[in-house]
Structures are given as structure tokens and as C-alpha cells.
Image (cartoon, rainbow, N blue to C red; front, side, top):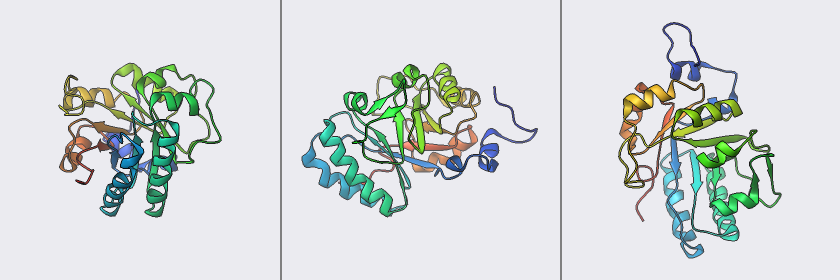
Length: 226
């Protein structure tokens, strides 16, 4: 288990650590985008993303489980133009079959046709199948739900993780929430920045940080209404 000097919290140690510029650049709030079912919805999605960026969002995970490779590429190119114009960072999290085409988790190789975003988000399954950190990306994050996944993400030297579900969430209504005590115990097992995910709202940031989180991640809390 990582240790820190007496009187120094895990979060404080991360904030004061100047050894990793990527971690220092991480905002405290991570927007996970809602699903886009078809290319016809990209224009509306882009308008809402622009609103979120105007409100101060600076870290975006482009999650999608519905589009094919061409559709997700179009979505990513639109999102890239908006995020980079706002000085924000974009993390790709495409449908599983698109990820299979674009990212070789075992060898860390991504195709030249992949949109050149700031990073890549590994699902928990892909994380556990990875033997090395995927190459060619400024930021690599991963979805974690238990101690084994956190340990593997730490061993691979990823930049940050999401840990979920912390509280009850409409996105995964059947999932059993960790609750803050279990979250705190798990987050203490890694030196990586941990974003609390599941049931988060903008006003839970301080509670999350007191529980050992670096920041919070959410869909509904940070996504503007259509």
C-alpha cells in the first residue's frame, strides 16, 4: 500500500507531487458523456458539449456504446474541435468493437486512423487483459470497481482511474454501491488519482475529496439539458 509522510493525506500528496505533470494538469471534475445512438444526434450532442465547456468543463471522457467506427470517429472529431478550442482534454472510450479495431491492449499499438485525442480510457475488462500501458497516449485512464483492478492499473502506471459505483446511480440501477467507507479503503490502496463515479453531483466534490478521491466523475451532473 502506498505510504505518505505523517500528517499528509493521499490527496494532499498527489496535489503537492510535482513529479508527474500529467497528474498536475488534471481537473477535479471529469465529464463522462451520455450515449449518442446515431450520427443524426451528433449536432445536438456537440451543442450540449459546447455548453458544458462554456461552464468550465476541462476533462471529457467520450463514452459511447452505440456507434460504429465511422460514427464514433465523426463524434470524436467534433468533440476534439470543441474541447481543444476550450483548452480542455478529451479521453476516448469507444464501443468495444471499435476499441478492438483501434487499440491493441496487449501490445500498446493504436491505428493511425484513430482520432488524435489526449488519451484513452480502458474498460475494466480491457484493463485486466492489458500487459502494458497502451503506447502513444498522453493520458491513460481505466474503470475500476475492486482492489484487483486498482492494483493492476497502478502496476501499469496509468494516469488516473474511476472507481465506481460509489452511490446509487440511475445509469447502473442494479449495481450495489460501494458507499464512502469502502471507497475510502479502496482508494487508499493506489497512488493514482481516483475519480469517484456513481451518484456524484457538483456539490459532492468536497465530500469525495475528504473520502480520498482526487475528484469526481459524472454524466448527468455535468451535462446540460437539451
